[in-house]
Length: 569
Image (cartoon, rainbow, N blue to C red):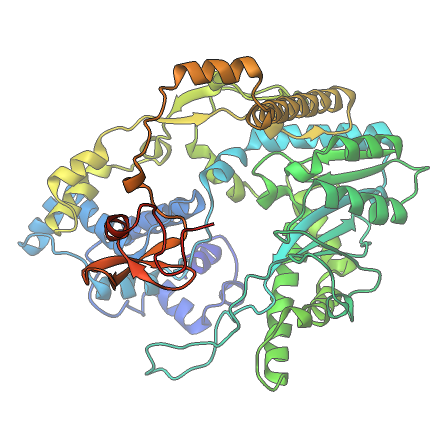
């Protein structure tokens, strides 16, 4: 309504303004002529202050520190008590009351531009690394690579992995409003499946690579899958260096031409850094470009339109298949059929082109990533920027720096003390707990290493550094294996005559055991009575089962042994 009024004041007609801003023309006319009044009691906070509060809540959500409904109520109450207490007393003659659900409902009605959403988790490393400087460095490397090799959209590829559960739970189901708990039956299993997808900036796609957490493949796991799909197994069902090298040789090189340079954009996962794979790529005219670390949520094309659509279609197809099956349960043998249906619907040229466009990779657009996606990085102060395309074998502990994000300084007008006082007065937190939270805590975090920046993995400097790191790892592994072999040989080696003689001299001679204390080898101690004296605790002969004590046997015989079947042989 306010925007429509401003449009009319700027020269637009009432009809045009009402159509552009989706408000009734009669209501807009009444507001302009003063014939319409706002119904209900006036809000305890002036409208202009509520607008500032709405903007503050939206800015906090953009930076990754969104306020819940309860937090917003506490913050608003504290702000009123700290900034507008005198005004409330002067107009109402009472102390400022605490705000409740009624004010919240009215606040949402007066400001329809805000809503309550469930936030997605964003780890601190991703919030810090997805900065404007990191993106500029990536686009610099990308632009230089494209111009150097004169790459076209059909020469730019992106590969990534996505995990699947054979029997996923539906997100929402229709149930009774009065039921407090709604359940969904499914099979409990530890099955995990990974699909490696590769697409080009021209809208093309390669056959997927599906990995099961199995030791061997059964015919049911490869039947009715996507055309040309490649199947593998691993212990965890995830991608590793050997499987990525096998996929690169059998799928990527088989679907591309070696006469023209090919650019493969991927993340910094350890499975992509195998020296043998990089050597194969260098000899096959393929350039590996690694995305900056912890920035795939804004720069990975497949994570945008393709994988999101693939996950939604996989959920819907799984729900439909669960209804079709008689037992309403899905197994790992049903995955190929369900994945094929979802893959055909999601991995389309339209979704692929939209993915590359949203990340600004093709066509190259440095402003494609919206500024709102980079706002969480503004609360983290970067103390140093490493050079691009340089990698060290191991990061040293000297990279540790004391770093404390100052959220209050990044948000104008934000003060934590009134909010803390409101928490204490409401009984949510005690004064001692508030003091502990307000005490500055120095957090140590590592500076981003050179590996965290965008880099061409097949470049000479990076490839040589990776070779050196691989050589050091192999050397350490060989040294460890040699030490283990030496320990094993020392334990298994027979003693020499000199070592045996020295050990005998160092060991005192054992005392001779009297014959009466010797244990007959043919007798076994059993809780039975003695046949000679009748007392319990007799030993039973293992040959004739005659029970006796050793003392009783020596009393009637000169040799230890069984009195029934004779001394032991």
